[in-house]
Structure formats: C-alpha cells, structure tokens
Length: 183
Ligand code: URA
Image (tube, rainbow, N blue to C red; front, side, top):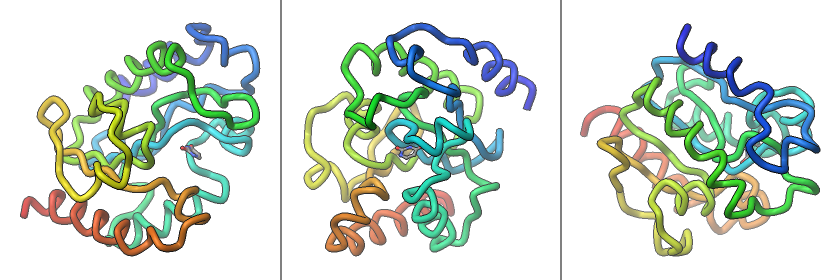
C-alpha cells in the first residue's frame, strides 16, 4: 500500500527519542496493508532490530503459531509494535519514548483500519487503552479504541516463561477470531 510504505519511508530516519542512537533499523511493521486483524507488541528485540522486521525472533515463532491457531496467517494480518526502535538490552520502554512513538502506531491503525486489534503484553494494552491496570485484570474483555475492537492478551515472550498463561491466551485468541468473524 502506498500510504503505509510512504509513511514507513517518512519515519525511517526518525530521531524523535533517544532510542534512535542505538538502533540498526526502525522496525515499522509488516503484513497486509488492508488487514482485518492487527497484532501490536512492545518493542523490537535484537533480531528485529537487525532485520528491520517485527517478531522475527523467538517470540515471533510463537506469535506465528498463535496466529495460525486461529486460522489466519502472518501475511494476512498486520504486525506492529508500540515502540519502533530497540531499547538497549531490551529494557522496558520509557514514558517519553512511548509518547514519542505512539503517534506512529495511531497513524498505522488509521491507514490499515483493522476490525480488531490484539495487544500483546501489558505495554501495548496499557498504552492503547490508557490504563495502568495489569494484564491479569485487563484480559478477558473486549475494549474499544477509536471504534476498533481491542482484545488484550499476554506477550508471547511472557508465555515462553509462564506456560500457565497459555490457556487464557488461547481463550483471548478465540475471542479475536470471533470479533474477526463478526460474532
Ligand atoms: N517483541 C515485541 O514486542 N515485538 C517484536 O517485534 C519482537 C519481540
């Protein structure tokens, strides 16, 4: 899509926050420009920074399986992050970095116009839903973000460390599928 790639080009040299100093690539996002389902993660890790693509490391393999578990493919959805540049040592994103980067995600949502957004992990959920509530209490409900349904779930990296969250995540993914189906 012209609008998305023009926008990616526009921010490819972004210096809006300090993360620009340590990055290899701005990790803009990937997938179908007209996707009905969008996944939003936290920030690029080492492999994402190296390749310039979202979710291509260990948590990316799990995200691919999560997407396929509900009958979709990586190519048919859109995948982006709250933060487009890798934080040093994968530390948590800071408030000022989120503030600098969030407008870019908003613009991507505007262009893609998904039916449903699945947020991965607490940073994505808390940023889009403007809350400080933790994941355990946030998940299990459908929210609204400017007319788009939002289904919060755990981050794949968290699932790799906490297998007991797999079942609730599966419940959330089934909800994503139902929203996509218009049920
Ligand atoms: N974790 C994220 O939140 N995003 C990525 O792109 C990769 C890992």
